[in-house]
Each structure stands twice: as structure tokens, then as C-alpha cells.
Image (cartoon, rainbow, N blue to C red; front, side, top):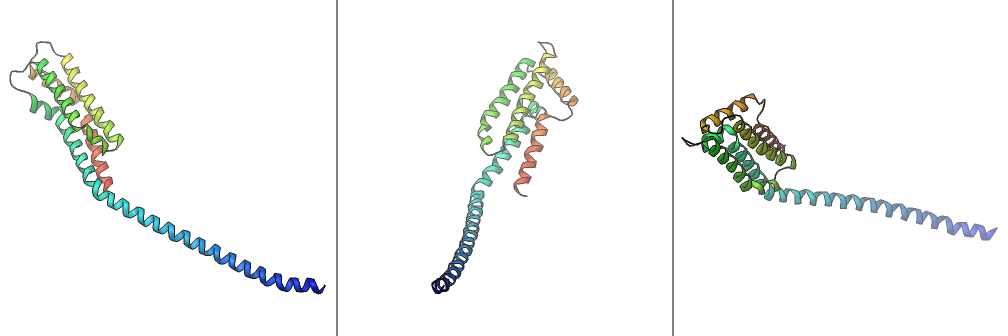
Length: 181
């Protein structure tokens, strides 16, 4: 019995010391984990801020170029720029389609900096504008003048509730606003 009492005298303080040590180590590990999490979050925020200093101007420039492209291929703006007095409808149709495609190829790299949905709307606006020109050309005689094609394109544009170029422009503008909110 005396041996058990001696054993308990040694074991109880040892268990208390071990329990206290375990508690203190576990608490320090938790504090260390919180410290590391805070440091990691701060470093990520710092890296993101540094990255934004570089990428934000590039993204803004890309959105500017996207909107400029969409404005330039808007039928009203494009016809006024491309049409030359005396052009046939076939020549005007070809020039309008060529202008849209060349400007698209010139701006293709902007898709790296804009959202996927923005780029899809831009491509849709490009295709719908070409389609509108082709539908207008199909609806007039083959020997019609460029003015007649212009009038037919404008007429189709008036029947459309919202031009595809306007939809894409509004989407791009909204995305730019989100960059600052």
C-alpha cells in the first residue's frame, strides 16, 4: 500500500506537469498558426496590391480599346467613316466587313485583360454587325448604290431593340466600374 501511495505521489505531480505542458504547447501552436495566417493574408494582400499597380492600367487600357472597337464598328459610325460617294452596295458591303474584321484582328490581344463574357459579347457584336450588313445587302438589288445599302442597314438598326455593339459597350463599362468598387 505504501508503494502505491509513493507511486501516486510521483504520478499525480507528473501528470499535472504533463497536462500543463500539453495545454501550453497546444495554445502556443494555435497562436503561432494564427500568426502565420495573419502574416500570409497580409503578404497576399500586399502581393495583390502590387499586382494591381501593374495590371490595372493594362486592364483599363484594354477596356478602353474594346469600347473604341465597338464604337468604331457600330453601323452608324462605321458607315459614315467608310462610305465614299459613288460606292456600289457590293463594294461598301465588302469594305464594311473588311473594316470590322481588320479592327477585330488588331484588337484580339485585348481578350487577355477583359473578362471572358465581355469578349464573348464583343465577338457577338462583331458577328451580328456583319450579319446585319449582309441581310441589308441581300434585301436590295445587286446593282444598288452604297447609299441604298446604308439606308437598308440603318433601317434594320432601327428595328432592333438594342444594338449588339451597345449591349457589349454597356457590359464593358459595368465591368470597369466593378474594378473600382
